[in-house]
Length: 346
Image (tube, rainbow, N blue to C red; front, side, top):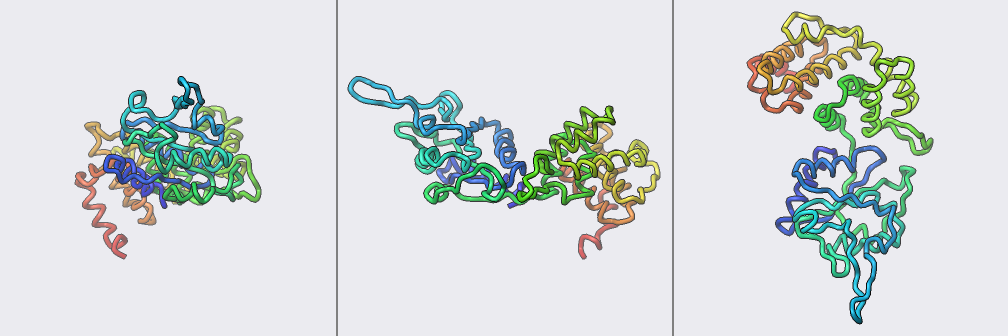
Protein backbone atom coordinates (compact mmCIF):
# COMPACT_ATOMS: atom_id res chain seq x y z
CA UNK A 1 0.00 0.00 0.00
CA UNK A 2 1.36 3.44 -0.92
CA UNK A 3 2.39 5.68 2.01
CA UNK A 4 -0.38 8.26 1.54
CA UNK A 5 -3.05 5.56 1.79
CA UNK A 6 -1.26 3.86 4.66
CA UNK A 7 -1.21 7.13 6.60
CA UNK A 8 -4.97 7.30 6.26
CA UNK A 9 -5.30 3.71 7.50
CA UNK A 10 -3.22 4.49 10.60
CA UNK A 11 -5.16 7.66 11.23
CA UNK A 12 -8.47 5.76 11.12
CA UNK A 13 -7.04 3.09 13.44
CA UNK A 14 -5.97 5.81 15.86
CA UNK A 15 -9.41 7.42 15.79
CA UNK A 16 -10.96 3.95 16.11
CA UNK A 17 -9.63 3.63 19.66
CA UNK A 18 -12.34 6.06 20.81
CA UNK A 19 -15.06 3.81 19.35
CA UNK A 20 -13.62 0.48 20.39
CA UNK A 21 -12.80 -0.48 16.78
CA UNK A 22 -9.01 -0.38 16.93
CA UNK A 23 -6.97 -3.27 15.51
CA UNK A 24 -3.18 -3.35 16.05
CA UNK A 25 -1.33 -2.71 12.78
CA UNK A 26 1.93 -4.26 11.56
CA UNK A 27 3.91 -2.38 8.89
CA UNK A 28 6.30 -4.34 6.68
CA UNK A 29 8.94 -2.84 4.44
CA UNK A 30 12.58 -2.72 3.41
CA UNK A 31 15.12 -0.67 5.40
CA UNK A 32 14.80 3.08 5.01
CA UNK A 33 11.36 3.24 3.33
CA UNK A 34 9.85 5.38 6.08
CA UNK A 35 7.91 2.98 8.30
CA UNK A 36 8.79 4.81 11.51
CA UNK A 37 8.38 8.20 9.85
CA UNK A 38 4.77 7.47 8.91
CA UNK A 39 3.87 6.55 12.49
CA UNK A 40 5.64 9.59 13.97
CA UNK A 41 3.92 11.83 11.43
CA UNK A 42 0.48 10.59 12.56
CA UNK A 43 1.40 11.43 16.14
CA UNK A 44 2.55 14.94 15.18
CA UNK A 45 -0.58 15.60 13.12
CA UNK A 46 -2.80 14.82 16.11
CA UNK A 47 -0.44 16.33 18.69
CA UNK A 48 -0.28 13.01 20.53
CA UNK A 49 2.66 11.26 22.20
CA UNK A 50 4.36 8.34 20.44
CA UNK A 51 6.11 5.85 22.74
CA UNK A 52 8.70 4.02 20.64
CA UNK A 53 9.70 0.68 22.17
CA UNK A 54 12.44 -1.37 20.47
CA UNK A 55 11.70 -4.95 21.48
CA UNK A 56 14.97 -6.07 19.84
CA UNK A 57 16.84 -4.39 22.69
CA UNK A 58 14.82 -5.93 25.52
CA UNK A 59 14.54 -8.96 27.75
CA UNK A 60 11.13 -10.49 28.58
CA UNK A 61 11.30 -9.00 32.09
CA UNK A 62 11.66 -5.51 30.60
CA UNK A 63 8.03 -5.76 29.45
CA UNK A 64 6.59 -7.83 32.24
CA UNK A 65 8.20 -5.72 34.95
CA UNK A 66 10.13 -6.60 38.09
CA UNK A 67 8.50 -8.77 40.78
CA UNK A 68 8.41 -7.52 44.35
CA UNK A 69 6.95 -8.87 47.57
CA UNK A 70 3.85 -7.21 49.00
CA UNK A 71 3.03 -8.84 52.36
CA UNK A 72 2.62 -12.52 51.50
CA UNK A 73 2.08 -11.95 47.75
CA UNK A 74 4.33 -11.22 44.77
CA UNK A 75 3.31 -8.28 42.56
CA UNK A 76 4.89 -6.76 39.47
CA UNK A 77 6.27 -3.24 39.06
CA UNK A 78 4.94 -1.91 35.76
CA UNK A 79 7.70 -0.53 33.48
CA UNK A 80 7.51 3.27 33.25
CA UNK A 81 7.98 3.15 29.47
CA UNK A 82 4.50 1.65 28.93
CA UNK A 83 1.65 4.11 28.30
CA UNK A 84 0.13 5.52 31.47
CA UNK A 85 -2.87 7.85 31.30
CA UNK A 86 -1.68 9.96 34.23
CA UNK A 87 1.89 10.29 32.96
CA UNK A 88 1.50 10.27 29.16
CA UNK A 89 -2.12 11.25 28.53
CA UNK A 90 -5.37 9.47 27.73
CA UNK A 91 -4.53 9.05 24.03
CA UNK A 92 -1.40 8.27 22.05
CA UNK A 93 0.48 5.67 20.00
CA UNK A 94 2.41 2.71 21.35
CA UNK A 95 4.89 1.91 18.58
CA UNK A 96 6.70 -1.43 18.69
CA UNK A 97 9.49 -0.89 16.17
CA UNK A 98 11.74 -3.70 14.91
CA UNK A 99 9.32 -6.17 16.48
CA UNK A 100 10.43 -9.12 14.35
CA UNK A 101 14.06 -8.46 15.33
CA UNK A 102 13.19 -9.33 18.95
CA UNK A 103 14.13 -12.71 20.36
CA UNK A 104 11.19 -15.17 20.40
CA UNK A 105 11.03 -15.04 24.20
CA UNK A 106 10.49 -11.25 24.04
CA UNK A 107 7.89 -11.60 21.28
CA UNK A 108 6.02 -14.10 23.43
CA UNK A 109 5.93 -11.59 26.29
CA UNK A 110 4.31 -9.09 23.92
CA UNK A 111 1.42 -11.38 22.87
CA UNK A 112 -0.91 -10.35 25.66
CA UNK A 113 0.08 -6.69 25.42
CA UNK A 114 -0.81 -6.53 21.72
CA UNK A 115 -4.06 -8.47 21.58
CA UNK A 116 -5.51 -8.11 25.08
CA UNK A 117 -3.93 -4.67 25.67
CA UNK A 118 -2.69 -5.81 29.07
CA UNK A 119 0.24 -7.46 30.83
CA UNK A 120 -0.70 -9.00 34.12
CA UNK A 121 -2.39 -6.22 36.09
CA UNK A 122 -1.24 -3.53 33.64
CA UNK A 123 -3.84 -2.23 31.15
CA UNK A 124 -3.06 -0.14 28.03
CA UNK A 125 -5.23 3.01 28.23
CA UNK A 126 -8.27 2.75 25.96
CA UNK A 127 -7.29 5.76 23.85
CA UNK A 128 -3.90 4.36 22.82
CA UNK A 129 -3.36 2.77 19.40
CA UNK A 130 -0.82 -0.04 18.95
CA UNK A 131 1.32 -0.01 15.80
CA UNK A 132 4.37 -2.12 14.99
CA UNK A 133 6.94 -2.26 12.19
CA UNK A 134 9.65 -4.56 10.92
CA UNK A 135 11.84 -5.48 7.98
CA UNK A 136 11.04 -8.42 5.73
CA UNK A 137 13.14 -11.56 6.07
CA UNK A 138 14.75 -11.11 2.66
CA UNK A 139 16.06 -7.62 3.47
CA UNK A 140 19.29 -8.74 5.17
CA UNK A 141 18.18 -7.33 8.50
CA UNK A 142 18.41 -9.14 11.83
CA UNK A 143 14.97 -10.78 11.84
CA UNK A 144 13.18 -13.80 13.20
CA UNK A 145 10.22 -15.47 11.52
CA UNK A 146 7.16 -13.93 13.17
CA UNK A 147 5.37 -16.66 15.17
CA UNK A 148 1.86 -17.34 13.94
CA UNK A 149 0.24 -16.45 17.29
CA UNK A 150 1.93 -13.03 17.18
CA UNK A 151 1.21 -12.44 13.48
CA UNK A 152 -2.46 -13.25 14.06
CA UNK A 153 -2.67 -10.38 16.53
CA UNK A 154 -2.16 -7.74 13.79
CA UNK A 155 -3.59 -6.49 10.54
CA UNK A 156 -0.65 -6.48 8.10
CA UNK A 157 0.34 -3.85 5.52
CA UNK A 158 3.39 -3.73 3.27
CA UNK A 159 4.66 -0.32 2.19
CA UNK A 160 4.86 0.21 -1.57
CA UNK A 161 7.05 3.19 -2.36
CA UNK A 162 5.44 5.93 -4.42
CA UNK A 163 7.45 8.85 -5.77
CA UNK A 164 4.54 11.31 -5.70
CA UNK A 165 3.96 10.56 -2.02
CA UNK A 166 7.66 11.00 -1.26
CA UNK A 167 7.81 14.26 -3.21
CA UNK A 168 4.81 15.62 -1.29
CA UNK A 169 6.54 14.66 1.98
CA UNK A 170 9.83 16.15 0.79
CA UNK A 171 8.35 19.56 -0.03
CA UNK A 172 6.47 19.60 3.28
CA UNK A 173 9.66 18.84 5.18
CA UNK A 174 11.96 21.25 3.39
CA UNK A 175 14.03 18.76 1.39
CA UNK A 176 16.30 20.59 -1.07
CA UNK A 177 14.66 21.25 -4.46
CA UNK A 178 17.74 19.84 -6.18
CA UNK A 179 17.32 16.44 -4.53
CA UNK A 180 13.63 16.41 -5.47
CA UNK A 181 14.42 17.42 -9.04
CA UNK A 182 17.04 14.70 -9.37
CA UNK A 183 14.61 12.00 -8.18
CA UNK A 184 11.93 13.28 -10.54
CA UNK A 185 14.54 12.83 -13.28
CA UNK A 186 15.70 9.40 -11.98
CA UNK A 187 12.66 7.99 -10.12
CA UNK A 188 14.06 4.46 -10.03
CA UNK A 189 16.74 5.71 -7.61
CA UNK A 190 14.27 6.61 -4.87
CA UNK A 191 14.91 3.09 -3.59
CA UNK A 192 17.53 0.77 -5.02
CA UNK A 193 18.52 -2.00 -2.64
CA UNK A 194 19.82 -5.39 -3.69
CA UNK A 195 20.04 -7.64 -0.62
CA UNK A 196 22.17 -10.11 -2.57
CA UNK A 197 25.01 -7.59 -2.63
CA UNK A 198 24.34 -6.29 0.91
CA UNK A 199 25.50 -2.71 0.20
CA UNK A 200 26.51 -0.41 3.04
CA UNK A 201 25.10 2.78 1.51
CA UNK A 202 22.19 2.63 -0.93
CA UNK A 203 19.39 4.90 -2.18
CA UNK A 204 16.29 4.94 0.03
CA UNK A 205 13.88 7.61 1.26
CA UNK A 206 15.89 7.76 4.49
CA UNK A 207 19.28 8.07 2.78
CA UNK A 208 18.02 10.77 0.40
CA UNK A 209 17.17 12.79 3.49
CA UNK A 210 20.80 12.26 4.53
CA UNK A 211 21.87 13.46 1.06
CA UNK A 212 19.79 16.60 1.57
CA UNK A 213 21.69 17.27 4.80
CA UNK A 214 25.02 16.63 3.07
CA UNK A 215 24.10 19.13 0.36
CA UNK A 216 23.45 21.83 2.96
CA UNK A 217 26.81 21.18 4.63
CA UNK A 218 29.12 20.60 1.67
CA UNK A 219 27.70 22.58 -1.26
CA UNK A 220 30.44 25.19 -0.81
CA UNK A 221 33.13 22.53 -0.42
CA UNK A 222 33.24 20.98 -3.91
CA UNK A 223 36.12 18.65 -3.05
CA UNK A 224 33.93 17.03 -0.36
CA UNK A 225 30.46 17.16 -1.90
CA UNK A 226 30.76 14.11 -4.18
CA UNK A 227 32.17 11.91 -1.44
CA UNK A 228 29.53 12.99 1.05
CA UNK A 229 26.69 12.21 -1.39
CA UNK A 230 28.20 8.79 -2.14
CA UNK A 231 28.49 8.13 1.60
CA UNK A 232 24.73 8.66 1.91
CA UNK A 233 23.24 6.99 -1.18
CA UNK A 234 26.03 4.80 -2.53
CA UNK A 235 28.74 5.26 -5.17
CA UNK A 236 26.66 5.15 -8.37
CA UNK A 237 23.67 7.21 -7.21
CA UNK A 238 26.02 9.70 -5.56
CA UNK A 239 27.88 10.30 -8.83
CA UNK A 240 24.63 10.78 -10.76
CA UNK A 241 23.19 13.17 -8.20
CA UNK A 242 26.43 15.16 -8.11
CA UNK A 243 26.51 15.46 -11.91
CA UNK A 244 22.88 16.61 -11.89
CA UNK A 245 23.61 19.31 -9.30
CA UNK A 246 26.72 20.44 -11.22
CA UNK A 247 24.62 20.97 -14.36
CA UNK A 248 22.15 23.33 -12.68
CA UNK A 249 24.21 26.43 -13.44
CA UNK A 250 22.62 26.18 -16.90
CA UNK A 251 19.10 26.59 -15.50
CA UNK A 252 17.05 29.62 -16.57
CA UNK A 253 16.70 32.52 -14.13
CA UNK A 254 13.89 31.57 -11.73
CA UNK A 255 13.37 35.16 -10.59
CA UNK A 256 12.61 36.19 -14.16
CA UNK A 257 10.12 33.33 -14.50
CA UNK A 258 8.39 34.41 -11.29
CA UNK A 259 8.24 38.01 -12.44
CA UNK A 260 6.37 36.92 -15.57
CA UNK A 261 9.12 37.37 -18.19
CA UNK A 262 8.94 35.20 -21.29
CA UNK A 263 11.65 32.63 -20.56
CA UNK A 264 12.23 29.60 -22.76
CA UNK A 265 12.17 26.19 -21.10
CA UNK A 266 15.50 24.33 -21.32
CA UNK A 267 15.84 21.62 -23.93
CA UNK A 268 17.64 19.19 -21.60
CA UNK A 269 15.23 16.90 -19.78
CA UNK A 270 17.24 16.90 -16.53
CA UNK A 271 17.14 20.71 -16.41
CA UNK A 272 13.38 20.65 -17.03
CA UNK A 273 12.92 18.45 -13.96
CA UNK A 274 15.20 20.73 -11.96
CA UNK A 275 13.28 23.87 -13.00
CA UNK A 276 9.91 22.28 -12.23
CA UNK A 277 11.03 21.19 -8.75
CA UNK A 278 12.60 24.55 -7.99
CA UNK A 279 9.43 26.39 -9.01
CA UNK A 280 7.32 24.26 -6.68
CA UNK A 281 9.75 25.17 -3.92
CA UNK A 282 9.32 28.86 -4.75
CA UNK A 283 5.52 28.45 -4.69
CA UNK A 284 5.71 26.94 -1.21
CA UNK A 285 7.88 29.81 0.03
CA UNK A 286 5.42 32.34 -1.43
CA UNK A 287 2.42 30.74 0.31
CA UNK A 288 0.64 33.18 2.60
CA UNK A 289 2.42 36.24 1.21
CA UNK A 290 0.76 39.18 -0.53
CA UNK A 291 2.58 38.13 -3.69
CA UNK A 292 1.40 34.52 -3.67
CA UNK A 293 -1.24 34.70 -6.41
CA UNK A 294 1.11 36.53 -8.77
CA UNK A 295 3.83 33.92 -8.18
CA UNK A 296 1.35 31.06 -8.69
CA UNK A 297 0.02 32.67 -11.86
CA UNK A 298 3.45 33.09 -13.41
CA UNK A 299 4.39 29.51 -12.54
CA UNK A 300 1.17 28.31 -14.21
CA UNK A 301 2.04 30.40 -17.25
CA UNK A 302 5.50 28.84 -17.39
CA UNK A 303 4.03 25.34 -16.98
CA UNK A 304 2.72 25.65 -20.52
CA UNK A 305 6.20 26.36 -21.95
CA UNK A 306 7.66 22.86 -21.62
CA UNK A 307 8.16 20.93 -24.86
CA UNK A 308 6.37 17.95 -23.28
CA UNK A 309 3.09 19.01 -21.71
CA UNK A 310 3.37 16.13 -19.23
CA UNK A 311 6.20 18.04 -17.55
CA UNK A 312 3.86 20.96 -16.93
CA UNK A 313 1.21 18.60 -15.55
CA UNK A 314 3.76 17.15 -13.14
CA UNK A 315 4.78 20.66 -12.04
CA UNK A 316 1.21 21.78 -11.38
CA UNK A 317 0.29 18.49 -9.69
CA UNK A 318 3.24 18.79 -7.30
CA UNK A 319 2.37 22.42 -6.64
CA UNK A 320 -1.25 21.52 -5.84
CA UNK A 321 -0.16 18.78 -3.41
CA UNK A 322 2.16 21.28 -1.74
CA UNK A 323 -0.04 24.39 -1.43
CA UNK A 324 -3.56 22.93 -1.63
CA UNK A 325 -6.73 24.24 -3.24
CA UNK A 326 -5.55 27.88 -3.16
CA UNK A 327 -4.15 27.08 -6.58
CA UNK A 328 -7.67 26.76 -8.02
CA UNK A 329 -8.43 30.37 -7.06
CA UNK A 330 -5.71 31.74 -9.34
CA UNK A 331 -7.11 33.15 -12.58
CA UNK A 332 -4.35 31.59 -14.66
CA UNK A 333 -5.30 28.09 -13.50
CA UNK A 334 -8.37 27.93 -15.72
CA UNK A 335 -6.32 28.92 -18.77
CA UNK A 336 -3.70 26.29 -18.00
CA UNK A 337 -6.35 23.60 -17.40
CA UNK A 338 -7.99 24.40 -20.73
CA UNK A 339 -4.65 24.07 -22.50
CA UNK A 340 -4.09 20.52 -21.26
CA UNK A 341 -7.72 19.31 -21.19
CA UNK A 342 -7.17 16.83 -24.01
CA UNK A 343 -4.13 15.39 -22.24
CA UNK A 344 -6.09 14.81 -19.04
CA UNK A 345 -9.01 13.23 -20.91
CA UNK A 346 -7.01 10.98 -23.16
